[in-house]
Image (cartoon, rainbow, N blue to C red):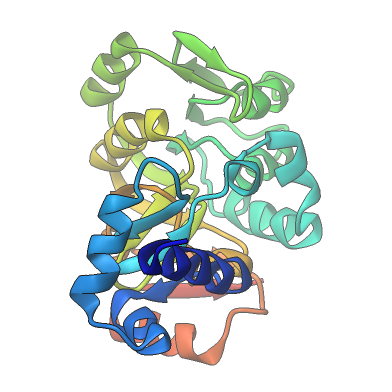
Length: 254
């Protein structure tokens, strides 16, 4: 085995044990230059799972990154339920609200007051199931291809619709939040819809449980500073609390 392949195997071993490692840190661990690390990855790009995302290395395991909405509903469900309830309580009479796809945003739909009169624009079938049970809501739903893993309905026509409609607030979701690499999701097909939701909403509120902080997924769709508020659980670290305070983002812990 060549020295380059040996280093690749060592990198994979490190990244299977850690969420992410910078190129600089990896070069120090392997006692080589940062350029050597980058060259190794370029030469092995067709047969290794390491991805270099703007200087941060992640292990792109297909099995690890395979997303299922049903699995996501089971993960940190108590925290997501509290986050969803807190978000639902913010919705006022006659509000126009956008709901992103995701397991946490489904809990918003579940928790809505059944007598509330409001307009909800929905992008996912899982949330739509619960919205239709609220008799006083006016509901709009995007259409197009159905993605079973995320429950998203996605098409070019959906983007046209979202780009011409406006909302008082967006309840958004994310699979990863990183201080330097921004807010990410698992699938690239989610990105245009998420960007359209952000652009069409006056107030943007991110709903994420604390496990998402510090994580990086492969598809970046915005920076953290585009959100005015974040609702999360009480397990968020003091370091992240301080960072969000410095960014001027209101943090709501439930």
